[in-house]
Amino acid sequence: DGAYFKQKQSNWDWYVFGGTRASFYGEVFEDPVYGAGVSVAPSSRTKLALDMYMGHERQYTPRHFSLHGPVAAIYRRITAEDYEDSVDSFSAIISVSHTVSENLSLFGRLSLYDEGGEEVLLNAAGQIPGWLDLTYDITYRHQFNSIGDRTNDITGFYRTIGIYEEYDNLFISVYRPITEKLLVSLETELNFTSAEDRANRDYQRYAAYLQGEKLFGGAELDARIGVENWVVSKGGGSWAVVGEVGRRWDNIQVALGADYQRYRDHVIESNEALLL
Image (cartoon, rainbow, N blue to C red):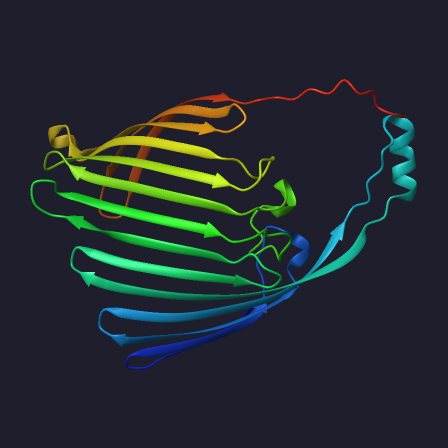
């Protein structure tokens, strides 16, 4: 529950909001969040924006014990108590977008978080007309330092996989029609991190897709097939083959899909005995 207000002017607008969150995490329903933002368009091709967010969150963390077995279960039921902590998070995001021409648009964003965790994103998207007839999208991300605990809205998966370390990420996708109804797309993503652990891994992702619309004569079916490969550091990775067939009407869409995935990972086993 909350309130949101936005005011639009001729070449700029602003907004404010505040309230409590709807969240997957039930214990934060009553924790407050606030935010505000402003954007201005100095020209028809350029837009500047500033967005700010602040949130407070109470956290309840269960105590952990090193005991195991029936004795530990009884002991835990008798003595286990959750302890309460709190997290306050603030973020400010500065972004700029500019349309260079009908075939090229640029976007940049700088995200600033309290206690570090700054991230920059640069994007270029557009078309290469003529015999190439390509549509492309290129995105580069760089995180300058580590990101730890935040409120659930902006923390990512910190409480599951831990701290995000510095990284560089490059994503490139290209699309090209091969007939009036068929389109082929290629994607690649390269990620390089400054640390190697469960949450921070170097990886390369490669994918190719073939899709079409209104195929097979009067059936007018949409179809898509693709293959994807992940190469992950420390011996991990996967292969996947995906396919989907569907039909669209004015207000209804029905699709049937299937995929096959083969995973590969590096497992470390420990022979240390558990202490009772």
